[in-house]
Length: 431
Image 1 (spheres, rainbow, N blue to C red):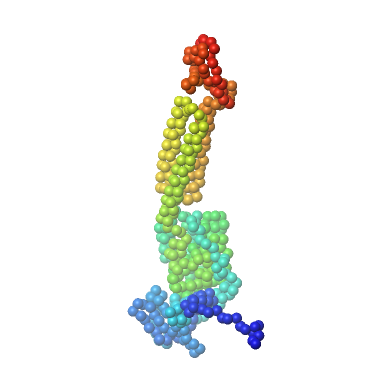
Image 2 (tube, rainbow, N blue to C red):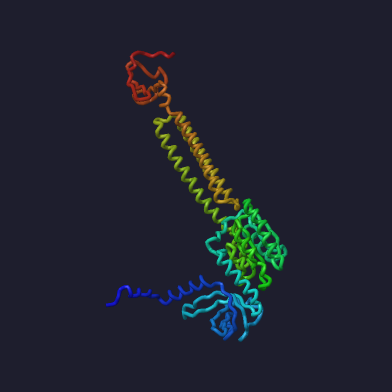
């Protein structure tokens, strides 16, 4: 009989597609992005603009695909047998279960020393946790100010400023100039960032854009500096890195809170379009309008209940009720007019609108409460509680003159806690 302790647990049974996806997820988490050096084999360019080939060396080979967008950025024509260095992402082509490398950039071999430095620094900083997703912060929904670090003469600055002016022209922008290429660039970039950090701690800016246009690995090398990487990680506010083209990767990309494929995309990520906020304000205005209308209706019901508790209202009560109705109508009109005016203020925030509405509701409630108190002061029962009586004949008509009564006539005296039946015993003379 088999020893139960030696019976291995039954392996999990996978669906083929689920296994392919699990392998793809593991590759994504473990390797990507990945740089590879090898020799091109079986290269073919499809009519769609996509390129398909293999990279090989003496120990093995891997299938590769370069889609049209990346292929259009090549500054040379790949050929069979070329030794190249590529940057891309490993994945699994699930319909066939094939391992493949999606190539995002390619260059002839020979710049390998810089690649090796890049990969060594990347591995070391990644091991320290500088790239961890858990330390990266979400972007502010509505920044009070935006800082930009780039060269004053760079085309990237024009692109970023144009995008920010189009999407959120009301948001202040602060430029911290720095060289973005050359031996002095890393130090200037660090100083520029630190100058913006002081403004961020003072509450003047809420997000920083680190941007420059595309170029070769040598052109972008300033953004692979270790001191710059640690300065980015130390930022008190989120940093968006938009360096190079979509296929370019630098150490700054991995350290920043968010990587943008281009400088323009970085600006669009930092500032939501004004139209989105205006649509939101319109929705808030509608909700506030409905809330005010409901509050006024409830206050009107409370007023009706207060009037009904007064008993037999005299002419003054009716007049006060009419005045209150006119006041409520004017209040509705004033609130509506104010809400319409508020919708034209596209820069107002939802929180400000809510605060203003609450203040107007408070003042309206106070006005209604004062009116209610005035109405209660007119209640005849308050007078009766001071020792006065209200006289009425048997038909309920108020007795206001001695000439209205005669001997033998029954009348009723209403006091604070009830009615007293009376009979006139002798003629009454006017005083």
